Length: 248
Image 1 (cartoon, rainbow, N blue to C red):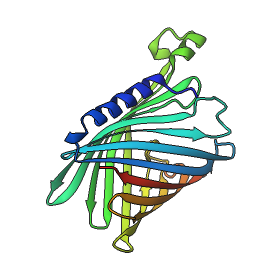
Image 2: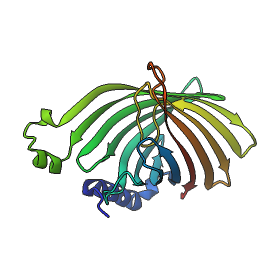
Image 3: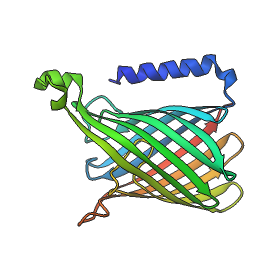
């Protein structure tokens, strides 16, 4: 399996740091899920697996994770679809919790092309309502092998820069029981996806707290190709099932 060496090195260093310094963390958890779906570019049903490691110290949470994708549309043996690393800080305004999240997202979506994102998000919740607003800057570029193959000598010839993209997520949460709830959201981003503002997703998520250590969830998503455009097209759907395990 061909995997980006740089991403593995970063992940290994983070895991090594967490393991050697875990006494400073108040909480260590793992978030993993399986997803299946279909869209206009998947050439049939696809499957994916995500694993994320989160370590909390004080009000800060550091995280790293990767997405593996299995689809007929990708004959390349490299199944690494995305890699993400971020840090989050929690504070309060008028006794309401606010999260400030910054992350780096890398996506080698073809043999020649890759996508790099830097993003900042603010998450604010009041009772049943939640709002996340932020921005990202994105660069599409050819990798080093493609630059040599196509003889791109100038950096400007091999990159496209999107300096600003609005990120949003509006959520309504309905409590079913003490252990379970349902969230309905409209958003233009997901864990490893950042769409443009005009391409929102509709999502319904079910959470069930099995015990103090385990949280189970399922997520159903519907994606459009354009909402504020002249024409709105269906893009795809996905179904996700996952678990959050608090190790410490």
